[in-house]
Length: 187
Image 1 (tube, one colour):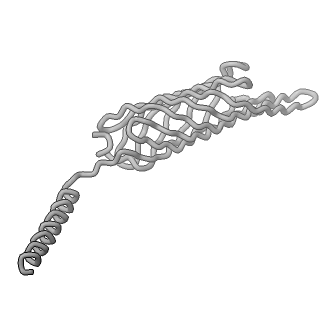
Image 2 (cartoon, rainbow, N blue to C red):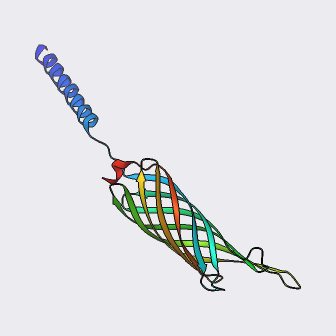
């Protein structure tokens, strides 16, 4: 009986030591984040490529999530030409979902994405009858972006193009990035 009791005590002590060793290894292991989530907000200038070729201004807001080498984005875009007060004007709104690839560096990243966007185009033609025309379409969206990150704030540029049946437009702009921009992620 003494041998069985001593054996059980030794086995239980070895399990306790083994469990403590696992805890020490886990405590010393550096956990690096493999994802980050952030908001982009910015202003872009572009062109109505298909319709009249007028210069447009865009406001862009997007929620982005990077996981490993992939980026997932949900983007909201509002745009208008500069003819607001002249009579004939054009306005665009877009909601799009994008997927792309990311190239990370120590203090930033570059990404290229593509996806689908739902676009609403409003044309105001002020003549004798004062016509307002609103049409919607699903378009193919391409976006490239590059950012420099400093902890929770980043600044960068993006370029985008939307191909749809109602209005083809694109632009280049400056963006401010706010969110989970941990430096360890880029190492």
